[in-house]
Length: 143
Image (cartoon, rainbow, N blue to C red; front, top):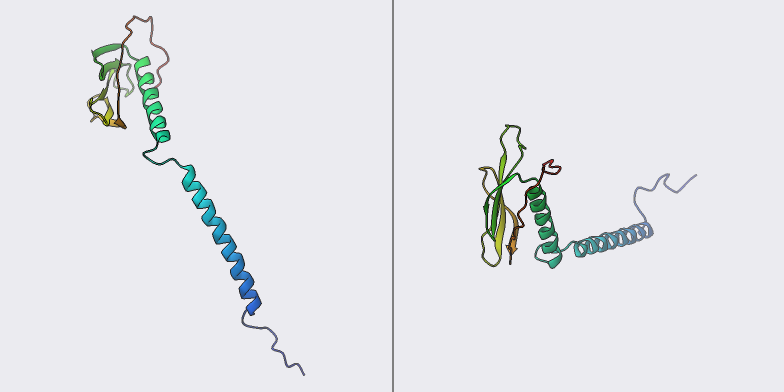
């Protein structure tokens, strides 16, 4: 005659303590990973983010200006020029880059008659200088 039940239906106290300890260790590891990841991402108002935004904006301005076929307006804080057709309508495109000139102002890019889109915010200083010369043919411009 067997007095023990064939299969226990509950966890023992030791099993619960071991499982709880493993879960606690995993939760601490996940929390540490999240904290490290949060510190690795620069804040929206950090110098690193500002430098990345400025570099991207200047890269885009350079790419646009390298394709320019004609300039229709030039000033220290704005430039408007035409580039070869990118929209497939057979007409040259017009791009305007402008800074509002105020400290902590916004640098914008306008494509054709679309609304001006902000490219960089909190711009403290922006100044364009022009070295005018004629070129034989525009470089590679793939929009």
